[in-house]
Structure formats: C-alpha cells, structure tokens
Amino acid sequence: MSGKLEVRDLNVVFDGFRAVTDLSLTVEPGELRFLIGPNGAGKTTLIDVVTGRTRPASGSVRFNGQELVGRREHQIVRLGIGRTFQTSVVFEQLTVLENLDLAASFRRRMVGLLRRRRGVSDEVSRALETTGLADLAFAPAGVLSHGQRQWLEIGMLIVQQPSLLLLDEPVAGMSRSERDRTGELLREVAKDHTVMVIEHDMEFLRRFASTVTVLHEGTLLCEGTVAQVQADPRVQQVYLGRSREEPDEPAASPAVAQGSPIVQEASS
Ligand code: ADP
Ligand code: MG
Image 1: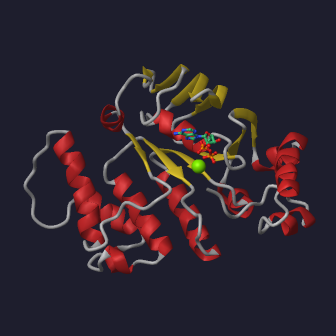
Image 2: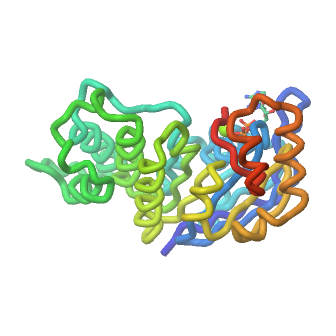
C-alpha cells in the first residue's frame, strides 16, 4: 500500500506570524492518524500545505518519496491526495448518487479513462455501501442530515481513489451515534487508504485512534497513543490553560472535572 507522508522542518509564516514552526512528522501507509490541538495550533494550515493551498516558508513535504512543496493543488490531487474542508461542498439539488458519480467522473477524466458507461460504476456502488448511504442513493443531497452529508463527502473523496485522505474535523456538530458511525467508516476507509483526521473529541479518539499527534502554537507538542498523550503534562497544560482563559467554553469544565482535560467539542 502506498500513501506515506513525511513532513520535515516545516515552517509557515503569514505576514510575519509563524503559524507552523519546525514541524516534522511521518504518517505510514495505511495509518489512521489523529491530529489534535487547540484552535490556532496550525492543524488546518498543515493540511493546506500538504494539499498545495498554502506555500511554506521552508521545509519539505514528501508523499511516497515525492516532494510536494512547489506543486500546484491539482497536481497534488493527481498524486493521490484528497481532502475535505471544514465547510461542505456537496451539490444539494443533485442526488447522493449523482454527487458520487460526478466526483468519480472527475477522476475518470483526470486519468484519461473516458469510459462511457451506463448505470452505476463499481467505485460508486462501493462508496454507497461503505458510507451506508445506499438507501438514500436517489435522495437529493439537500435532505441529508448533517452526519449523512459528511459521509457523502467522504464517499466523494474515496471514489476519486486517493491513497491519502485528509479530513478536517469530520465529526464536528455530529451526534454521538453519528460520531460512532463515522469512526467505523474511517476504520473501514483506512483498510486501504492512509487517513489523517483532525479531531478534538476525546471520546471519539479513545474509541478510534491509535496514534495521536498533538500540535500547539504551530509546533509538535507530543505524539503517541491516546493514553500517552492524555497523560502528558504538557498536553494537559495546553488544554487546561485554554479552559482557564475561556471559562465559558462548553464541555471544558465538565471534562476537567472528569479528569480528561483534552475533551473539547467545538472548534473553528
Ligand atoms: P487550527 O486549524 O489548528 O485551528 P489554523 O491552521 O487554521 O489552526 O491556524 C493557525 C494560525 O495561523 C492561527 O493563528 C490562524 O489565525 C493563522 N492563519 C491561518 N491561516 C491564515 C492566513 N491565511 N493568513 C493569516 N493567518 C492565518
Ligand atoms: Mg482548523
């Protein structure tokens, strides 16, 4: 399986502000990696750099050994990297099936396989199954619940057959049961893709994460299992400090009371 991501000594500066500083991390092929950190830690910026949206001041990002820095967004898509955004990109008037088919035809055009086919392609029917949206194939995307819409977006990514998926807060705003369903979906997807997911919800991490990378103010604070990062005093400090600064933050106080300081529901 391909899909290895190697970030080395990455620096990102916006108008003199250091959003990412000397960041290095490696994600192995087939890994389901979680990326956490308070708002402003640089998580989305990292995804923006990997996908060619933001140019770093210095450093290297290699994907399967190939340098990504300096490449344009569409070239990076073609190398097999797909992402979701914090805001939705589905076409509400089109059905679930049409949205998936459109995403898949984008890939078919891209790889020059202009197969004229009737009916539903294999990758689209597989995506309907994987995302659990088969029963809603003919429903307009506009009627989907928030959770179903996120699953559709993940489906629209996987039909493009990337080897690395970057998901920016996919469970934000979801109910507990939708979160669990999403975790199962990500596990399924990680069987044949590398997945890096930005998420804060500690319960979600405990259930589904193996390796967690913690960012803080643009630097790597620590990396390890959920238990390891939770036990790390620096991680507790970062999240406790935050909850002291923002006493009205929902979920922060009860989380601290339960002894799990890195529970955090909402984010940017
Ligand atoms: P996170 O996703 O971890 O919440 P971001 O990566 O979005 O954090 O942002 C990291 C820091 O960089 C924040 O302080 C943010 O304000 C700043 N930042 C992000 N994008 C830009 C930009 N385009 N211009 C200026 N500052 C930015
Ligand atoms: Mg963000």
